Length: 178
Length: 178
Length: 178
Image (tube, rainbow over all chains, first blue to last red; front, side):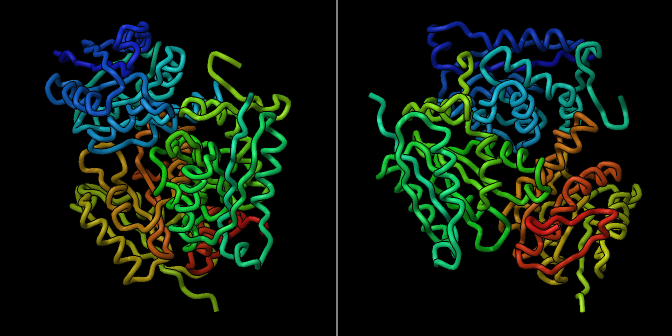
């Protein structure tokens, strides 16, 4: 039986966590995953302020305690003084995967020149993949389209569970496979 | 009234600072900014040798003491043993913006395959943006064309002053704006 | 007389070093260099397990003791727990050249979306250039095609020997030269 895979979705935003405005990034990520994945999964949504220590503790808890094989963050990747999501992510990852940030910025750069301001990264904490995404739903979709097809293979290589995509939405790629 | 924004232009070159050859990078950057900006600014030009400690102290002085919101360096980003500008820049920045280096190398790579040898970076020291540029005027223009439209928004997000561009020369981009 | 340049070729693979399967990466790199270079060179081939300390010691020995001006690794750059070649390379380099990894991932991304999973880097140990390559021969060729034309100039700038390419196979580029 295919196991249920917990996936973390972490919105990092002082204003959304204070109720000043609505979190749009978290729901956009959840909807995207729901459209793309066909294997069983369950979302773990968290909404926290832009605090490096809080973000780091939340991410490591989602991996270590909840057992998430995959965690997305949204928000906090820009040049504003309060943007600390990449630092918090690097703090708790064992290894970084620079190709994710490069590919997401490159895809975003085809749409907006300010894509170069994103400091988003991705990395592994043991067998779990953590990927920083931007805050705006349109930018989230651009970034996920750029990297999602490599994610199932990445998690398998890292020692995590298998996840399966709907090939009409996203063709999960495995070299030598299909 | 729009405030006068000081902009640092730092040429890092043993030979130019020793008078062995003429600094071409500094004047090229100053001319580029003069063509692109319409808000009031004033250049702070410095010519120093390729010494890591000197470069770091110069950059931090331009930000902390002179109040520069933006500093460009030229020279010292390659693989030669004396090339230490990226190290000196990283030394005094609070946070790095990897998208600048990626975008500048990508734009340069369309012109010369040796673009991959540039180790140029960009980062923030508090609210000031520091960007490494190459030494040759043609390569400087390629790099500035690749990133300048994102710079005004970057400085605003970081907490710095507003700078305005001539839209016929460079359209400063702000997401959701224009 | 043109000096004989030693070039290191290091296969990092638990399974190939244990004889479980045949090393295909090392021979592919040696064949590529043999086709491209016209100046005298001699290969130093090593086959070692995916152990960070062993890889680091091997790379520094090839540079410091054997006198290699150029060292390629193959294997160990992905997200698997045993993949540690980039870490071992960073351990023994004085300076990194991020443009190599970016350009190799970009070229590979045009072929497979999983190119973003490669964590390959390049760097300098004194005047020697060390470049991580993937494990599969097809991916090796893609990466070498993306960067080889910048390698002779890189080694010269770093203070190493001159190497010459067959211009019908790879045009070594020197800015302002040809």
